[in-house]
Length: 478
Image (cartoon, rainbow, N blue to C red):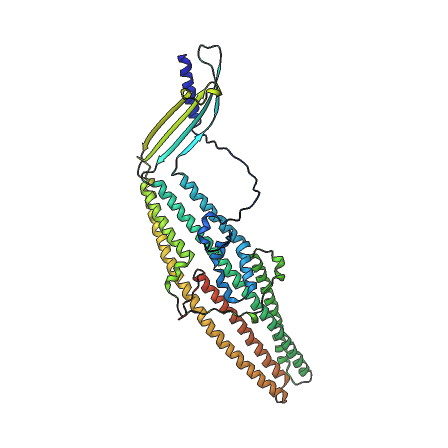
């Protein structure tokens, strides 16, 4: 009988040892019947609490400050911005990247908690001197825990959280960038629509000039050199028109991809006329430097400095001993009915302290590495600070001076219109030729192309300032 008990103990210990490296967990495959529309847990802080209805996309529109785009008074543009927010594949990948970092935080946090593993194992044995064999069943349960009295694992979790928070800022930066790209591309397309119309008028005028000069040349009134020059101008105008149409098609393709649609549908994309866009954005005379604190790249650089500091703390704590606690229980019996009874239960509890004695200098090197990384990240933070201020100032200067330039060009256009009207009267009076009149008309159309281009430049400057300030309103008009 005593031999039998000894054999059972040996079997119990063997089963316990065999299950130390085995983790078991029930797995259930459940068909996803309905896609959740709730806001992801990690984004709930982005959703306004006074909204009666909340969707999972509310925080995305908060990223881009959708109300700011209303300043352009263009419903078509607003629709494209919303489509990009919901359908752009770069933005979808940015959101998935955040989810990956969120799960990394949960995985790291698990290292701060005890872990338990369990299993089930049958055994067959034959005692020495016995002619019969017996069966046994074992259920081992192992509990392991590293006592985090020095908060090393907790610091690691904090470092991973910083990466997660940084991924959310990367996501926000991606949304701002895509929204800005949609707006700039859209305005460049409607500028090309306008310029192409004007260029077609210019080509018609140059064709008429060439026809008149060709007729004059046949009568000996115009030199062949002047006729060839007019022909060259006509060909150049036609070439410019083809180039403009090519650029428009490419930008339509680009806009299609930005809003998550096939470029095959690019030609059917709706847009407003440049003449009908009446944007209402006041350019501030100055912007305080504190505005850069709203930029996601600045905020992430700040987070990375904090993370690098935590990494240095963790590297120091690697020199400290680790305290591990191991608990185990095994139920072992010859039949399943008496398996979970106290007489067939074996309990154990152990603890140990392990400290590094010799690591070949790796711990010291790791500490120096983390310190160097901290210094590099800190310098990047300083650089990000200066770059952010530069981009805000550049965008502000461009917005102000391009507006002044547009006003001057509009004034020049009005003068050109007056001059053309004056020459039209002279033509009606017979004091100038039709050739002279249509040349004045071409000059007027050329200036009108500049007005259209500079109007769009002012709108894209506003978008650049929107992006430079982190999508926050910049109502700093003095």
